[in-house]
Amino acid sequence: MRIAELSRRSEVPVPTIKYYLRTGLLPAGDRTGPNQADYGPAHLRRLRLIRAFLEVGKLSISAIGELLAVIDEHRDDVHEAIGTALAATHTDTANVEADSPHRRAAREHADALLAERGWTEYCQPAEYDALVNTLAAYYRLGATDLLDGLGRYADAASAMADVEVAAVLARTDVDSVVEGALVGTILGESALATLRRIAHVEASARRKDTARARVRQTRPS
Amino acid sequence: MRIAELSRRSEVPVPTIKYYLRTGLLPAGDRTGPNQADYGPAHLRRLRLIRAFLEVGKLSISAIGELLAVIDEHRDDVHEAIGTALAATHTDTANVEADSPHRRAAREHADALLAERGWTEYCQPAEYDALVNTLAAYYRLGATDLLDGLGRYADAASAMADVEVAAVLARTDVDSVVEGALVGTILGESALATLRRIAHVEASARRKDTARARVRQTRPS
Image (cartoon, rainbow over all chains, first blue to last red; front, top):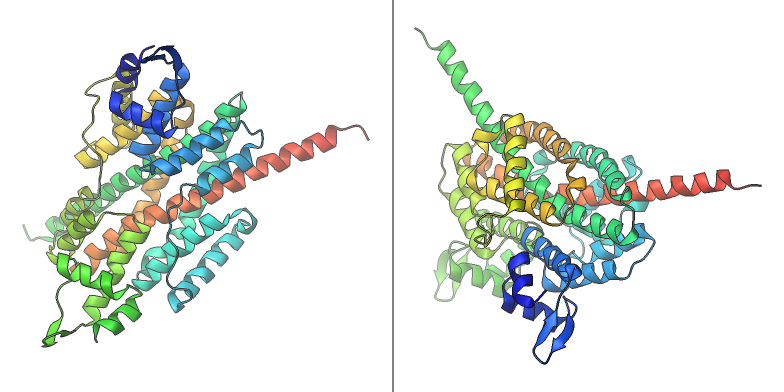
């Protein structure tokens, strides 16, 4: 197909497609004339992947480039491919605080949580840093009362990961397994965060309604 | 305290503090001289909040400004305050595709999921759009095999929201409830996403080990 049709079907504007071609995010089409090229289904799929990572995953163009490179490498060690790809999506900047009491508390908390679940050996450096950074923010804000649910989060994450990993591994070719794992991780994070927000609104509204009903019941009639 | 001590205790560099002061993200200190001001614990706490939203939540300065404004309004309708604040953190750009088959499928999927749980009335427009955008990306990529776990996500989100909302509402003053709800939402999303990634690595490593053990067992000795 021509670039105009590729744009229509992917819903990505032509200038954006040209930018992805220039930066190598999208491979060149087959040249059919001095100013014309032909694009196939692989180009369409690639544009849809870029959109998903960009619009839903809010990833940077350079992180997306690294994810796509891992998919293109056709590695047969899916487990390793995913690890490499996900490390690319961490945007944590170097930490200014080498060692503070909050950070030490966060590290102890993270270590205990991981050890309890036998996760220590599976926790990659990028995820460990992200976990410690997040916990350190709770400690700095004195918001450790909100950390009581963390074990539940870990349990829920574990139960869901089992189902998701099984779904991805049920795919038949390696490329599609690696792509599925990345799509599942990035889009799943967004889906889960959104559902959690809706559940929060529902839970706080329900508590408000219950409190109101209680007031009505105890009011003298 | 002087700005130098504020910087040391918050681990935020002095030029960054000055930038926050200029943009109004941080209220001015008490003037003690032509070029000097005094800062208190509220300034330190505010800097810690900004850091958490910026470094862990990866929010924009303008979104952080809106969250802080909601905390400063001291509203006593916590439920409403949270809704206003969270809408500010959505960065979804206007959608180019008014109506595509993928988008229609995503909308039907979202509607069914929300209706099943009685969540329809609690789902705010910003969350609804985010959910539909995420689901549309799955449909566009033909990755609906990865959506089987979505109901589980919703159930887990619901169970966890109950605990979290109870923890936040157990706080005694309104400001702290609103702040806690925002901190819990933003930092909790990061904590959950990280734990989910670790759980994924663990689940895929475990399956790899099981597959290896099976190969060893069936190998003739």
